[in-house]
Structures are given as structure tokens and as C-alpha cells.
Image (tube, rainbow, N blue to C red; front, side):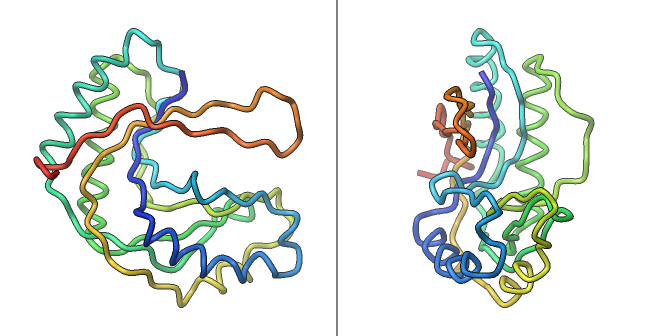
Length: 189
């Protein structure tokens, strides 16, 4: 199964971002972008790709330890950016160092469980809003998010999510995400 560790924004934070992003969907060319549905918004910490079913229990145990070793921390959504003209994203502010630490711990948990991970890269916290294929340019969308600053919340859990890939063959169909595990940070909750 395809899995990733993530931080999910609370409903209030998603509401704020949804209001900020609603105007972006009216910009010229917006219909050419594949907008990520709100229920799929997340900060990926570690993408594990294909994980054998028999590995999930050990992975879960190790992610639980990683969560327990990480204290809850403040975070908020702020501004935006893009990866070229391929992806539009909202950024994060608050204790981004704690978010990076949690990402490193989730990555280490996967590696210690025997999961082959991509080469270590500098973690750049982002929540993907839309994907493009080079047209339209995402500059106007990034500019539209420049002043956005959401309210702060406390990240209190680490989530393991399964990505169910589309099977219908219908163009534009997106993966469905299913939470398969949640662990409180630092004994939170």
C-alpha cells in the first residue's frame, strides 16, 4: 500500500485557507489547474511509496515512538509559493523547526522499518493547493496568497495516511486518502 506520514490542518485552519484560495479559482487559467480537494490537504512529512502490509505494524510502532518523542508545537498556514509551474502551495509559519524534526523522525521510522526511502532532501513544509502542467503560470496565484496569514493552532498528532490511487481511468480523478494511524505528540491528548 502507498503510505505517507503527515500533519493534517484542523478544520478552522482549512476554513481560512479555503476562503483565501477561493478567489484564486476565479483567476484566468484556473480551470486548467487540478485543484486539491480540501479533504486532501496535508503537510507530508515522509512519503513511503509502496509498503508491504506486513511492515505496517512495525512502522506504526516506530511512528508512535517518533510522535511521543516530539512535543506539541504551534503552526499556522501562511503565504504560498510554487514548484515551478507544476504545483501551487500554501506555506507554514510557527515552529517550523519542530515540523522539520517530526519529518526527520518519521523518515527515520520508515527507514528503520526496512522501507526504502528517497535520498534525504531538505524538508520544505508545504500544503499543495493545485497542480499544473506548465500552463498557466502560477505567479499570479502565488501573489494572491502573499498576504494570507492563518490563525495559529497546536500540532498535536502525527498521522499515517494511505493513498488509494484512482482505478477508474477517468481523466482528472484524484487519489483518495485514508487515515490508517494517529499518534499524539509528546503524550498530548
